[in-house]
Length: 452
Image (cartoon, rainbow, N blue to C red; front, side, top):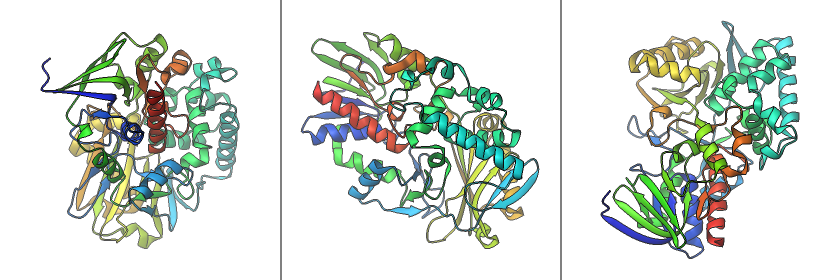
């Protein structure tokens, strides 16, 4: 490989998503030199923005912020990016077993028996999660047993009803881009623990979907990168990292960087594509080999107005009869148009990709029409982002742990490998999988690298 650019820095960061940018920002703030190598021609990682029509900004990736996500809130204020409340005025919809119902709040109207079962499920999941450390789930008592089970195994063993299981599966397709059978129970419990409870993950008002960012979450990443200036190198896909007694040499497309330390801020499965010499420890390799990216596609239908609001609806709906099993109203605050967002995750995302663009769009719009009426069939414009088709993401919204992965990986997920430190939202001790977790992980890795 030939390199046209050779640089020296105290720390080199691999990956220009929120975690890599947070790490670089912390290194620079400490007065140390830093270079960020990003494979894409943009920063932001799994946070991106789209403009399908003039004047409209869509969050194609990470979108929301919740009240307990204090780090991203502080950063947004510092960089002058205001938040806007997620529209939640009116009634939500639930579409289960061919029946459409309206409800208010978090708990859908699904019949008394199913409602009791759902409450029992939430209580049981919360109680189990409180016994699992989000910092070190592998140290939990019975960790091996919990990691051998899937979320589906746990739901069936506790005799939860089909409707309650369906509702949790819908949530899982959005949170993890995966089905309950694909998820280690230990992984799910540590994820809930790191967010402060299941309600914090699921709720709109007061939960993880509480607010959005004006101009999109990507605005924050762009401003972080602008502060770093020419320390950020785009189009630089890292191919090899060589470590020796004196430092690290990182070889990327068009660039080679010699540094004292490296921070790799990528999802674990993507790290496996980088040749690292010497090889990382066994447990770190296990994280890279066993974890895999979720499958999530975000679909946006743009209308001349948010017509569902006049029917008293929030635009938030759960459905077991549509490829988009969860919808939100993400219309601009000025009401200049209406935008319905549909999440297509897990098996539905894989089936959606197999249908192709035209048939996939028609299937999602048919689901929207079932929820919101025939007007939903004819949007003015359409946009979607299939994260599984993104080369430098490999999927989304997060790398998931199937059974056995966490106990095999253990502390190797974030323990330094010599001069290499690991960031990325998957390594966060709280709010993993979210922008909040990405920031914490990047700042933690920066502190480790600076401490030497």
